[in-house]
Image (cartoon, rainbow, N blue to C red; front, top):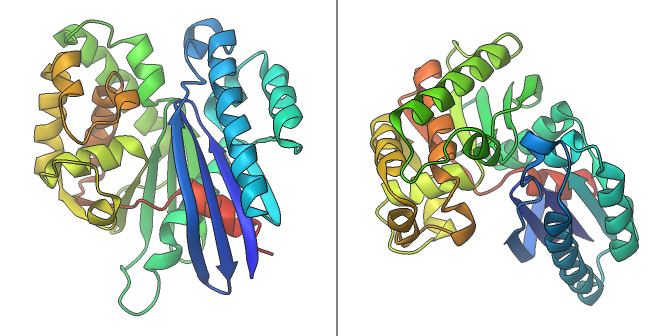
Length: 307
């Protein structure tokens, strides 16, 4: 048995998984998530702000204490879109190294996609599983990954549309204007066109959706009064419900979104853009439903260091 610590540092949130891995079994001990908005302003300035770095380093210090308490044998820290894009990425990596004692890996988009695929699909194979091939979409703060595969990745690509990036770029009014929404959709559709040049989207497959935008839309579709990962995991959400919820979210004020029981405070301002990405992908793929997974890149990172 190997005790591992996996850290996923994205544009919007930083997450920790402490787990024991034995054979094909992953046993959770700790799953934590803090919204630190590391990518705040990166799309506009090309740099991580000092405030965003400070929030992230505070979270890393807390994770370092948890990792020490659980005596993890192997630790891997993976950083994604915001860290790839920022001119001051070295300041980020130096700060993490000083607090955690390991080098953070700023991974390219194709590796991010492969880790997401591994985390999401490992449990779907075999008896009682879900038929492949799978088209996995991981909607992050700065980028969205598209991965097609069955038992292994066949094609993968990362494109620069995410819920934080698009909110900062377009959805600035409260509620967003029709012109802002249209501009957001134009960016999303162009990114899907770009992704489709690498990842086929017109064949039969199971569409698997990952990350907070997808799980929040799922929680709303399920009518939950509070966020429940057990109920959300492996739920199937109809395209019609995704479309209706997306329309409702982009028409709401920030205060309206904040009042939704399943809404994490750190997603209130960016959920509209995240829902739009999901909705436009489902329209493009022609998917009647999306299979929602609570297992994602964090689980993929854990499996990658199981040994």
